[in-house]
Length: 87
Image (cartoon, rainbow, N blue to C red; front, side, top):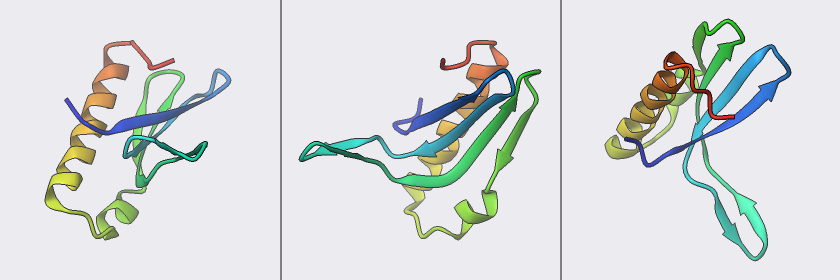
């Protein structure tokens, strides 16, 4: 299981757009997070598309963080394959 959290946006019956990023941080009443550029689009019929892999590949990430992001993506894909979207 991944230590990264997907941020999901639902587009009314069109599907889900999910960002893979580091967990959100709250400091001084401000919420922020680091988006790791790797995204998953899942259409309403369940078809999955991984987006922005080129941007992800270009990021200067540690091997551990890169592996964690890819594991998070795999975990998220499984959630949708099991028909249990995060919303």
